[in-house]
Length: 74
Image (cartoon, rainbow, N blue to C red; front, side, top):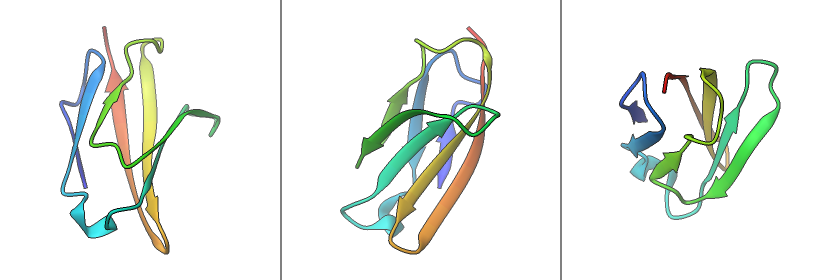
């Protein structure tokens, strides 16, 4: 999985997520691990409502998991 642009001003595109199949879950977490956003089957994310900082994106489908760090800098 690729997440870009990084750093971002709010919008994130998720690429190469086909390997997760038709059903997958996307979570955005802060540095403490608190889930701030949770959606299904999304290929883009809008993080503009969050404060500047480092966030973790997790994509999960069955036993497959991918993680990416994203810097939000508005």
